[in-house]
Image (tube, rainbow, N blue to C red; front, side):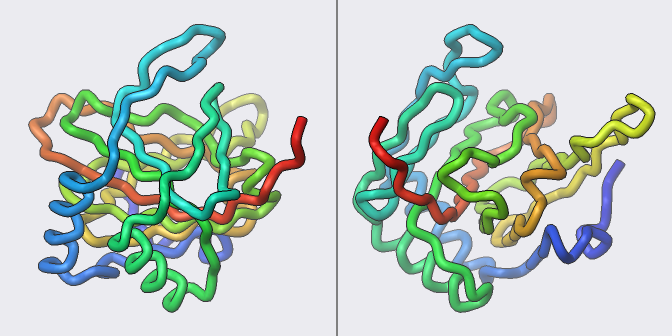
Length: 203
């Protein structure tokens, strides 16, 4: 089902449908695709090594090392466009970010499985700012809780070109999210998820 983002719990999610003007978003999409250092990594999924079904790039402050699904991401130095967008988001939200995970979904076969951004280096109540550039895709949310052992139906949002979704508070403790595959012909979508990563003590 489709869902009006205005009905999301404001303590957990805030949606800005026109965060970037269309022409600004167009330029940002083109520059991100052409100028960021994209790679496709191997991750551990259910005990198996598989290739991620998308391209990623990790940028940030030198100490913003991020680990998930068996990956350890060392940040690339900030790209000027990513810094410019970060400042714009920080001015709007009052949040502070030291890193950004960029995901490129080249077509409908590229996807993101169910997960929460609940790694320890993000803290117990992370603020994550998710900026969408390019083709709209269905973004799914579902509660982690299962009353009477039954999982609630997923909420489907269509995140548009230039829109910004803030996930905050207990959102990562209470919800999972995903970007499923689609058989519909769809173009390039780039998602920039700004985060604040805490330095981890050496093991």
